[in-house]
Length: 523
Image (cartoon, rainbow, N blue to C red; front, side, top):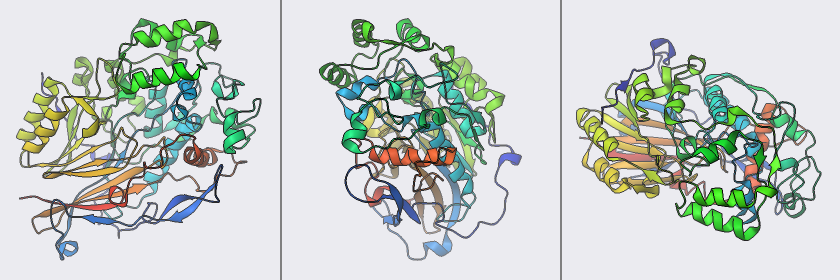
């Protein structure tokens, strides 16, 4: 129950220059434009659509008429969440559940690195906060940075965020080995070779050269601002659900992979996972052993090995991934030694950030908050009672099954808590809680693939405003099927996500869940 030390602020060289704020601008945000479908029915191309207006929400405080003239910016930053950087050739993936649940496999997954790099490019292009014009001070991820708790995926994510070259390929260094050239009609085969249902029934295109381009080396510029990392269940658990064991670890790095299951078996396993059962993987192992003769041979790769909590923290501390800082991106040497992935950090004078670990070490995709972390959080909030506090976690309140009631009550007891910012649900949602706002942001992997700029201001009248503005990646809206450059693939990443069979059509949320001004009182 040792207190987690407050991370040092970014070094002056990594901080934004203390220049006067730029004029607020909607450029590069969903205030200006959004991706919108063209045509009707079947596979739909995208183009530029109308932007989303900003909604003023006054559930926690009334909006004063002179607040724009009195306003002082306290913080300006970007939230990224649920990037799900994915090794699509990993042997322990659950693509085969698609036969029982169409959305269990995504046709865009092979381009997750390209999508994240394009989002990094978008953030770097922003001239400041779209509401205040203030420089962006930092970025923070709120978990599920990776998909399979895999060493290779973690390295790709860290490189995309900090800058460098990435080859999103494991196994055979010269060719793709996975479900998209398997010959099975269950999956979209972009280069032909099978009469798959995605092309036959949904009009998915044929894209010769797609798979080779997807695993080709690309370069990320890295974020131009400091960034912090929050852990999610997919970063810490096999498939975001299983606590591990030797069998699953051996399968991850081995040469056998299951590609298909009968519909009834796949649907039953999907229901088991969604209900939070079999967190140690006994039923999964039984299923895999029972279907061992259906497994195919793939090239083994030690870079697919799962990471322990200590190894995950250590990867962030690697100097190769420091980028614009800070060292460790919130994690410290003490965190590495203790296997602890929660911490606090100074955002600005009078503003504190707290990053929580809501993953369950015993398995389960639902949120978890242990007693030791709750005691630490109580001390941090009390010790910083004069600061405004922004709390970051992967899981939102509605997804917490262990310690969730206690966490919500704790945040409610401390008037300095201003916002609880999270992800996990892949859906935009903003809710008032007594004296603070809960801000849940959609993912980068599922449509509509968003990040969120958040600006905190003191309105000079006893109220604060939290401005939230969604941003899409820098990729062109219209995906050119013949363009297999990194930018072209990032555009396809968005278009394929929009067309994915079985996708939810409500993840963008309502207008009041997207671009907003959220009022609240402060002393």
